[in-house]
Length: 234
Image 1 (tube, rainbow, N blue to C red):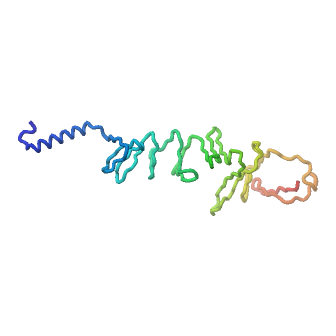
Image 2 (image 1 turned 30 degrees about the vertical axis):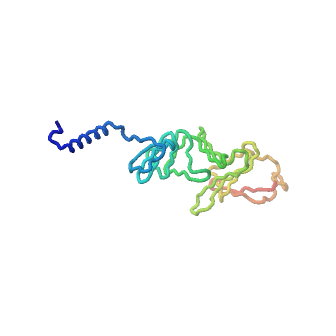
Image 3 (image 1 turned 60 degrees about the horizontal axis):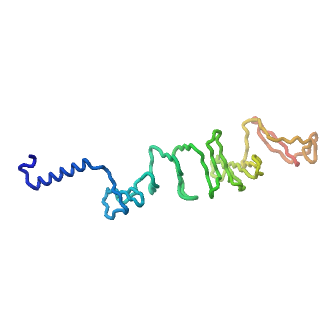
């Protein structure tokens, strides 16, 4: 009854529109056709899935690759994750060997170990064991001189204080720790030495009761008062 007294062309148009609307209502939304090659004459807004490259693509102003799960995705522009980024397994890599920078703005929490390598050899490791630990230097038996630099002055310089480790005999705890700085302060008067000489002589030219003149003095500060420690030839 709806078509009575309506021109034939209008009835055809209305029937066609009714058919199209019904198809849209029952159609599956956002279905991307699977293709083996990208379409040549795609229109803005078209979307498709390339089964060869395993990439979901769309034509905006240019063809862009959309993120898909289960395959590697390459981002050529800055991506912002406002809710965070979780890597449950695998490796988070920045650039290639010795290039690229991974920047973190804000706080970062890593529940695991952090390892830095050069040429496949570990040179720095931070462990999340119960005590916490930091290791510097190659762990493959190659001699190195790892160091830590501190910057405290108002003028830029290589370092203000440096701690350097060297030597070692292959036995735990037998290396040398050197400090380079202008002053070394202890906040307590208690100093514990693991080994103290009990020799009766102070030097080759004297005894414990009549020591020779010292070669010089080491000045330390104890309780706010400077003290001199003499040193001699052995």
